[in-house]
Length: 89
Image 1: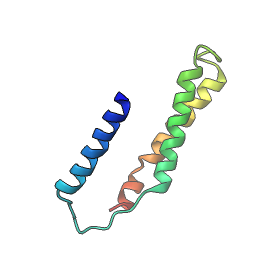
Image 2 (image 1 turned 45 degrees about the vertical axis):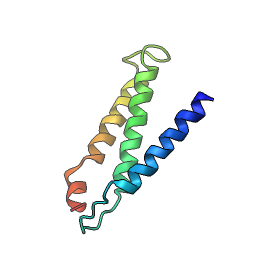
Image 3 (image 1 turned 180 degrees about the vertical axis):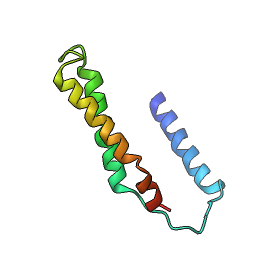
Image 4 (image 1 turned 90 degrees about the vertical axis):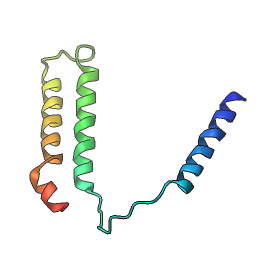
């Protein structure tokens, strides 16, 4: 019963915040960088798999771990490349 009471209070808080707080409009068109998001997710998945499997499933210096960390580094550099920042302007 306590969970429902807190959940309804949270929903009420979101509704009040949506009504009371002003909306900010910048007048600029915004777009989502789908390619950058995909590279970021791929890099994070590879990094988390490498950290999770390291030392338990595979040895830290095994080729599987090195490949996962290499993929994570490459995906990270692709998702934060300067050309992607120039395209978003």
